[in-house]
Amino acid sequence: MSQAVMGIGDVLFEEVRIKEGIVMNPNLLEYRVPTANDIPEISSIIADSYEPNGPFGAKEVGETPRAAVISAIANAICNATGNRIYTLPMTSDRIKGVISDTKGDN
Image 1 (cartoon, rainbow, N blue to C red):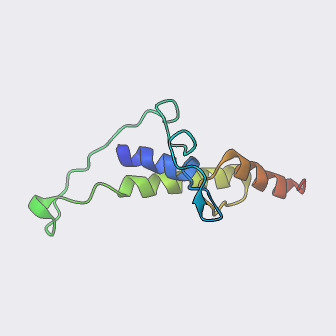
Image 2 (image 1 turned 90 degrees about the vertical axis):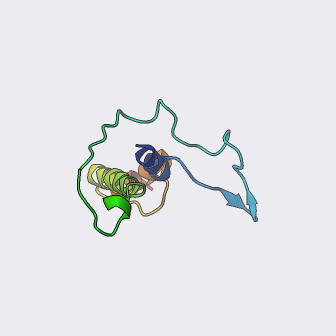
């Protein structure tokens, strides 16, 4: 579940801002990460299977939810706006930018 929350952070919040070689958001006051108010209710579904190459039949469970969350949110934004955003994070300013480009307001 923590990887799903990290995926939300990757796609919507987290960005290291650098100006002239200096990190402009070096602490948690300026570097945004998801908080409890930013994440939806998440349900985990465990698919029982056996992986013969894994230790004791185990599979990787860490990064897969993260990739799925990033893709799902990116596709939802694309479906809503009609344009794909290729830069993370997909902030409200970037989303407004692609909407403006579509309307020709920019």
